[in-house]
Length: 404
Image (cartoon, rainbow, N blue to C red; front, side, top):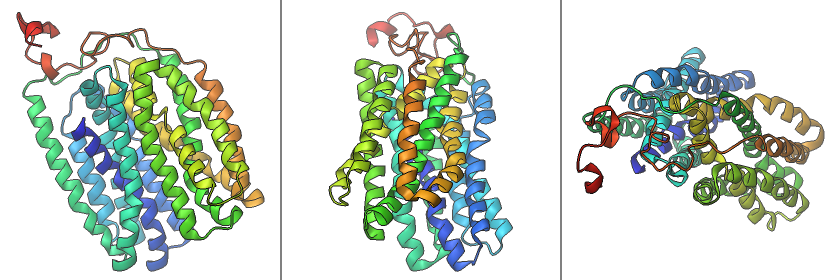
């Protein structure tokens, strides 16, 4: 899980690089605001739309090379974007970076699920890796571009290529003891997965809205400096990393669905408590709390989605880690209209109200029938390979149980 969590962090680092780099394209390349929004759209479309077909492909074939190649393409596309001279080339390279990000998630989510077995805590490590990468991206990219200019994006190519090489070696070793095709177990619960996807989209809208307007709320409504607003955003994102890890541990104790319901229900009072505080300093621990609570269901929803689609873990990962999370960005123009009329506080009030939809949506979720099955049992192990790669039809050889 350490390898998969690290790879996820490197991959999602490039999701954080793009929004950090876009303002420098405006300032140094004199791109218009429309062109700048087009660059953000290129990265979003490239990383969101292909994830479902890639997931379907990953469910038919192991394709161990896809995740390493995806990480490398994400870094190469994002890194070269600051070196090319024309807008169409920048657009194409960011589209390529988004495609690389999309190529990573479905097969990586599938294989990380195999390694995690039935543990929500283990899957939370994988999910938290992505949160860390997205969090670290702007923190490293912004000072580099400030000092060296937009061409400094090239400095971030080597980590992607190196991580791709490490992951490829890891996958090659795994392939020596595993099969090449996915084995399917259990019955898909498409209706419940659709309901879970709806909850994910609502939560994505809340999360994207918080990331967009928290800093502006401190600046416009609480009278803080831009640096103070950046601190508030940093605390909110940092709380999200902690919440992702905490959610996995809670789920292993009280169940996945109950954890999702607790996280969604607690988000409502946390947001209203933040809005009720008018002091810029006293509100800082509250925004940390909001970030923590809002991410408690994150990793749990990823694992729950794969349990609802046991025959298609790659597709489930593509939807929960990619498509549903990106879909929240589609509602940002509407939230922006609210902010135009009522300021950032108005946008946060809308998000607090939208939380009710997430609470209601999570009431229709149910624990999978095989949630209590031990890791490695037919109800839990959706992939061939792993420790049973050399066993006939997944059965243990004589003495194997004793050796375990």
